[in-house]
Length: 161
Image 1 (cartoon, rainbow, N blue to C red):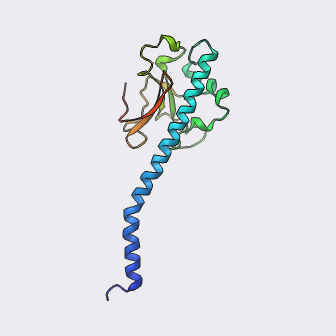
Image 2: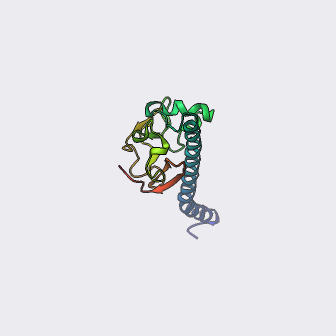
Image 3: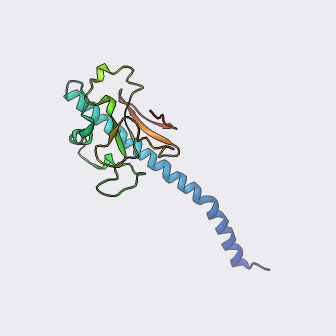
């Protein structure tokens, strides 16, 4: 009778909480990862519309968010839900310098060329040669990526340049 009925109840609740809290944390991160991928899909759609309006040419890397904004109508899709948020930074996406102002038609193997991606650089209009891909990945050791052909996907241990 070391533990009374109330003590046993709290012991069981404590054990259940210890088991379930990590599961809930994983579920929350999976939801953020999915939301981030949805953001990148919307950015990809905006990128495709931009290119269609400019004879197949992608925007300049230094102004890519500004160029895509008219096609999205919202700035919220440029903020990764997992990235640390602090205004005016807290964006968490970058544009590949290697495709800046290039014709989509002239990109060889567009299904393999990354255009937009999770980035450890949190500033607006972040761009580089894929050097800011978070390592390990931002989302459960992986990153969300958009390719020049328009598809977006999560990739575990995303490639580094």
